[in-house]
Length: 490
Ligand SMILES: Nc1ncnc2c1ncn2[C@@H]1O[C@H](COP(=O)(O)OP(=O)(O)OP(=O)(O)O)[C@@H](O)[C@H]1O
Ligand SMILES: [Mg+2]
Image 1 (cartoon, rainbow, N blue to C red):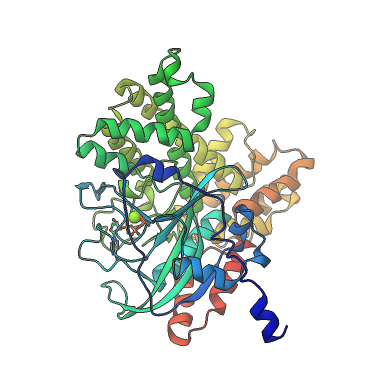
Image 2 (image 1 turned 30 degrees about the horizontal axis):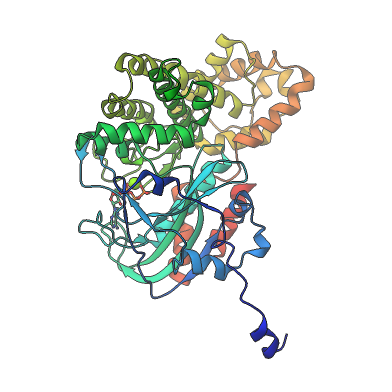
């Protein structure tokens, strides 16, 4: 193309700027957010783009250029106002009314090709009325870590937000927990919702029952629409509208119990389960000091500032239940307390069922196994993992690798390559052998497939993330990061 030709070619529209945007949050009104500007950055280097997510937006990746990403998610050209959401939250058990989006906003809302509403949320996009003394920025290392956590969890079947892009922004940041100055970035998070438990907590704190009821109706319309489909409309005079709200809380309890079971089976420690980090849709998000456990240890704690292990790996089910209990306080404005208590009573039953199912899947077994024998195998597996301290992800990856139909015939060849002196190992082999007797020969291949789904070869343990970061920090070498992202998908 000649220069003259190109001058005549009209500029191609940025696909992000011509997406069909929704205005669901805006329709709630300004009681729930502040309109904020984005920061201007000295540099814009696209470090990560998530092409898999583009397909969810109905965009063909080859038609979206890096410049399109940078224009929308680095320079923050946008179409709708940017909304910094207002929320409070219990942080390490203490109520904090000084929260809200302090370094992020909702850039836009879109409908995915699956018909669901999604938010593009930013992290590191500048100061807002909620930044307090802080800079409104995200470190590059923090961005890299969040990309990796989300992709890893997604690979392991966890209901999680994901990162759409990460742009390095050329500033120097000072942090107590990273050698400083350290590099800066801005991330776009693709998530189901930006509404947190803390969004309701703030409205209760302000004594605004009316706004709680309005938000609850809004949440049901957008994230629990089937409840409206099956319940009579509020104004119809039919049925009891309270029942719909009670069902909402019951479903939220189940979603959170399921999510917690997914974290536990994946060996994931979120590390900061404050109520401002709990999504109203039951989706996992906000990956700060997270870690995947190296070995099975319920006391494992990921955040250096979690002095009492409140958010330790093994405390996650209990703390998520506590968070659900705290949410009852604002929700009392619209939901019968006894109904919420009854729903919460079922939390552990739901959690245990989901966790057992997932652990059996990691061991290769389906749901139809006899209850007692299956429970025994899961228990023994956890004991063996705890006692032997073999690497948690490595145990399941090797099990997947070594698995052989022969195991159904001879118990002592089951996982014979496992290096352990644990006295439990023989009992574990017996329990595995026993359960295998309930699997038809024709279903053995399915066991392999199940293990392939849940037991990935690569799990991003901390040393791996640190090595990736060293290559970036020392040599600006991004190849190990991209290689790791490819390995995660395997
Ligand atoms: N560098 C910062 N500048 C301004 N505010 C910040 C900064 N870091 C954290 N905050 C604010 O502190 C609170 C708790 O932070 P937390 O780390 O849980 O959330 P976040 O990581 O900033 O955002 P998200 O929950 O969306 O992932 C939030 O209100 C957040 O906006
Ligand atoms: Mg947060």
